[in-house]
Structure formats: structure tokens, C-alpha cells
Length: 132
Image 1 (cartoon, rainbow, N blue to C red):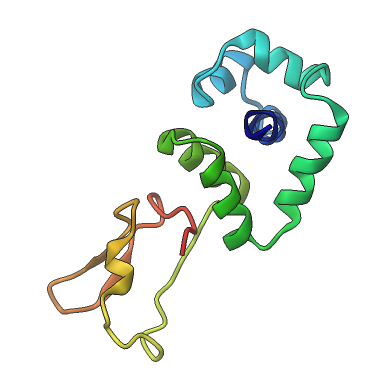
Image 2: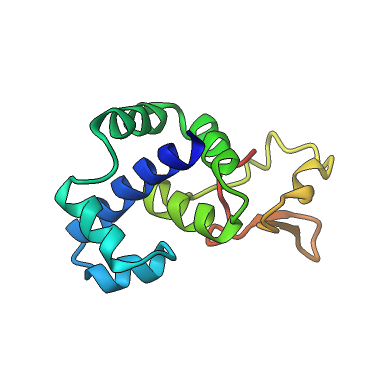
């Protein structure tokens, strides 16, 4: 079942990318799949409507919860990163007035958070996947 839900989320991402003017070939490369599968996604032949509804419900959740679900659907971090980037386009800013410099965020699995030479926490939004 997880692969079906991932397929539904990929279909939603494929439709978003198509609306942005991407070609099927580009979408297939981006999602690391073949053009036939993308064609099925875009024409509504795959996945089933039930799977698409379930995927849409997941994406209605607050991003931090939806991202956790997406991360559990596959171990391929590159694909999850790409999916999350299209769906949420993460932009994180550190609120220095609330940060206590505990360092817990520096354990980011995507290496999106670092401490600069001045001791300030810096987020690389291109790597951020809203996981924490």
C-alpha cells in the first residue's frame, strides 16, 4: 500500500510540474521514473481515484506531518527531497530571539542546518525538507 500512496503523491507532483510547463520527459527524469508512468499520471489512468484521494488528504495535513509520511513511503531521499521541494518549496528562517543554541537542529538528516563562524544557526533552504 505505501507504494500506491507514493504513486498518488508522485501523480500530484507530476500534474503540478506539467502546469508549470515541464515536458513529460523532464518530469520523468525529475521523479526518476519512465515517461509512460508520467503519461498515465497526467491522463488520470493511474493511480486509482481512491489512492489519489488518500494522497490529497495527506497533502492537506500541516507540512511537518505530511513530510513525515512522505519520508516513510520510500527510502530514496533524493525522490522525497524533490517531491517535498515541489509541494512545499521550504523557506525556513531561524528566529534568533527564540533559539537557545542547543545544537539539536544541527543533526538535520539533510545537512540543511549549520552554524556559521559567528555562532549563528543558518538554514540552507535548498536542502531543507521540513522534517523537524
